[in-house]
Image (cartoon, rainbow, N blue to C red; front, side, top):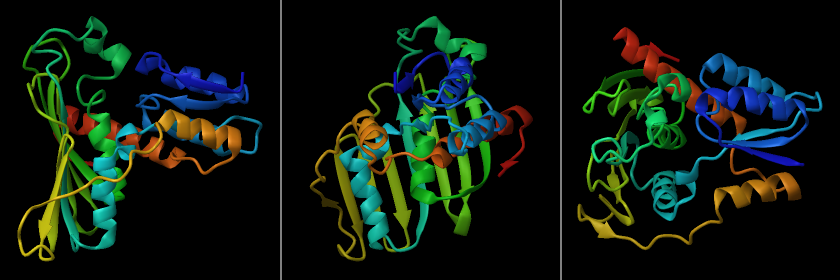
Length: 261
């Protein structure tokens, strides 16, 4: 065995990742990497140390989809000017339509509800787009009253005045995965497979765009990295930050106060 992919219960990610790393195996884990920021730092230390341990990666699938790659490239091109705001919404009707398995509502196994599950994708997307976070606040509600949040929003302050909004839930129908990014010179909107942008360059008109070629699946890129020595599509720091953002989101909700980084 050379490579280990971990897709066990969220509460077991830390234990299983640590076992595999100590055995010298390279690990691809599911989000979140673990349940607490302290556990994430321990796994980072093992993964990066000169101690015979393997390397740990967490795949961030949305980052490799053509629509999101286009939005990121547009931001990096400067055509949006100074980016000030981004919003990501990832929802489904798993609770309202009653098709999610019961363990999704077990906080001990999952660490929470919609935010730590579906909300992981908006969280890592916002970090990828906007950089280092400064603080986070959260509003979580229970629409179907199953013990964990099924309707959730976190608002994150990033450096240079940028604001990111992470929206998720198990009680929404017919909502496509959504990304909106605004800047001083323009904006880009992703609704499912549709991408538009507009701004000063387009004289204020919305323009439909052709997407770049789809990249290989993240798991294929990971295998190429660890087996053939190619650059990894993921970093341990990104995995740690996702855990830190989730930790902060839940602490902010539980305390009713802003959590800082």
